[in-house]
Amino acid sequence: MKTKEYFGLQVLSIMICFFAMGSIEMVGIASNYIKVNLHISDAKANLLPSLVYIWFLVCTIPTGILMNRIGKKRTVLLSMAVMSAAMLIPLFGTSYPLMIFSFIMLGISNVCMQSSLYPLTSDIIMGKKLADTLTMGQFVKTLSSFSAPYIAMIGAVYLAHFYGLNWRLLFVFYFAINIIAMMSLQFSNVANVKDNQKTSTYLECFSLLKNRFILLSFIGIMCHVGIDISTNTVAPKILMCRLGIVLDKASFGASLYFISRLVGCFLWTILLKKVSRRAFFSISIALILFAMIGLFFVNSKTLIFVCIAMIGLGNANLFPVLFSQAVLSKPEQKNVISELMIMGQAGGAIFPICMGLAFDRVGLDGSIAVLSVGVLYLIYYTFKIRKRAVDVVPK
Image 1 (tube, helix red, strand yellow):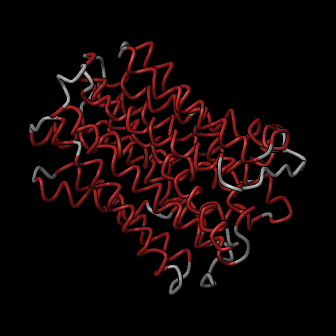
Image 2 (cartoon, helix red, strand yellow; image 1 turned 90 degrees about the horizontal axis):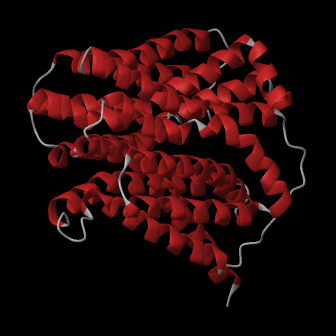
């Protein structure tokens, strides 16, 4: 087989892995179905997505150590094996303890996969093509996320009497995707590279929080990811509470968020070439702010859809700006800062819990208020960006 054909198969196997990685976004819509089926409180339902994202704080550094010992390819394969096992658990029952165990396994495997798949991709593709490949990977990952609400709806509507599968079709579908991804990567000629680099310690990472701007960026990433995960979870609830529609139809709200986030990735990639990062960040936050204000008052389906889409557009590309600002503030420690910022994705664990508690005590407006706190912080962070050297239009 020619070298180009080998390379094409390598890239294809990596893209299938990105699609498998996107399966983690299903936890938002799944938690809504679990709440309805088990008749549990919103706080208990929202604990499930939190159990997925808390592991970014715990497992990022151990994954780096694991990659050094067994190699990046084997780490990706191991993470997908654990994720596949987690997908099978709901097929044996939907009790709350089983769901907790499944979501914990999903969280641990997802962190390991995210922490190893990106470095593995950089081993295959070098130079300028790497950014394009990672962008394509994000596109494929978002396609996977976008599919989840539709798969759950198909299962709930058409397969409710097929061995009681219903919305659990989600887990069957993504189990199959994970198996395909594992096989494609295993039988590709992607090398299993061990870098044997020094891995940062927790002390090294958290000591950086003494730097005020790095602390602000870390909290900023927590807010960004928290808004992302929480919008995925709360979008169907907004449609159910305000319009009185059933969950199967309301799940479109989560899909709309992913669609708008996908569109935002392309639009902001173009915009970033024409404006400064501080201007881009300001525009993005303004979109989310106006959407949050709107969600407190609007009761029209069209306007609710517009608000959800605005959040997706605004929140699509905040992570690269937050991440790069932190790294550029202290470039001599970029590796340690990178690991710390990845840990910041644990914000996806904090916001859903707070929103669930607020929903149970105050109602839907309480959940939206929690999201708004994250937006207000990002507005504060915008003014801090203005004080730093970020006026150069990125190349």
